[in-house]
Image 1 (cartoon, protein in one colour):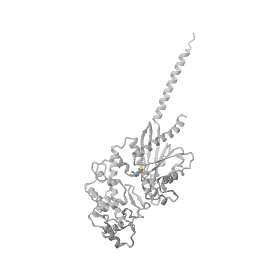
Image 2 (cartoon, rainbow, N blue to C red):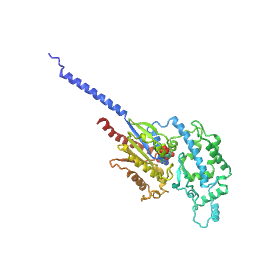
Image 3 (tube, rainbow, N blue to C red):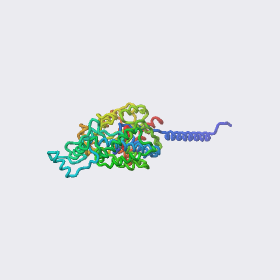
Image 4 (cartoon, helix red, strand yellow):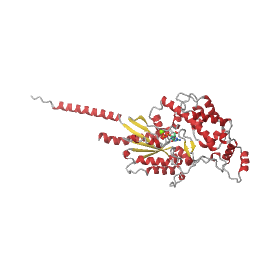
Length: 436
Ligand SMILES: Nc1nc2c(ncn2[C@@H]2O[C@H](COP(=O)(O)OP(=O)(O)OP(=O)(O)O)[C@@H](O)[C@H]2O)c(=O)[nH]1
Ligand SMILES: [Mg+2]
């Protein structure tokens, strides 16, 4: 009798071992899948909307804002309101609007007109009365409100009767040396602000006497007019709510808040079992020097460009058009050798502002090669093509989306499709490298 094992037993063992190996492999594969990490960079020039997109990711895929986040955003919102006031007070002198100035009655306009003007064709719309063209304004870094550039002070247009009346009144009242109660309050406010180095702490409120000054200033008719000329900003309209002791910023407040990014942040989200490491960087020129160390092993880049900025200059370089700067930076990113296999997604952001701006500002005034109608479709096509032609790699597909980053519903739709696209891209890449 031999002692060789019987054939059926051998088969049984082999099958069992094989099953165990299969199970282990499946477990290992699942574990690797669970640990899959996508590295995503948010790039773009200053004020493009990168941090706003990151905030939306926190709202949509994360657990929203922590108690600590809310405290910091609260102080930053209050600081923005204070900056708005400083800007408004400065604008009163730049625009030559005296404190207490109200839109004059038709009779007043007529008598001023008869005394000053010889011809009859005059512009009576106060808001059109200043030479604040988009070319000579910059956006204030802290508050997102419009400030005149140093070399392009807005002056009342000679043809605008109400703006001229304001300037006349301003001079009669003493110009920068006005002595009215409101002018005095404005001076005190500026003095205090200039001496306050540290802003409002996380658990602090604006001192009551300062709040009283701000409310008085905000109720001044002259200040309101200068607000109408320079500012389209919801912060000031919410002044009393924001300065209330119990104020906690809402998601909307936080999305509208402008805080320039000066350090690189990394935030992790798990979307459909895949961990996404999202890096947000500062986009202004001095901040871009910090980008390079992030460039290794990047799965995807979301390049954010504020398409509404076609008539604006860079905050840090007032002789450079923002859109031109966005295109230049995009060109160096899309053709960078480290990003040959990186998925590039382009967000043409601030589409809401773009739509509004097209109603009053001609694209051709800033981009003479634009030959279309000044319509949304023609303009968006022109800028989409302007970005696309910068890509020198014919095999690369650039995924382009029109975005409104302050709107959560719209952004969720876009981000869901972006995540699906990034996962697909990295799947093909990942399958090749891990299971080939
Ligand atoms: N109306 C409107 N405002 C937007 C949109 N996207 C961003 N903003 C506003 O634009 C301002 C600048 O946005 P940020 O997200 O801080 O810009 P950023 O690209 O991070 O800027 P840096 O940190 O300087 O590089 C903020 O006040 C945002 O609320 C948009 O689609 N529409
Ligand atoms: Mg930022």
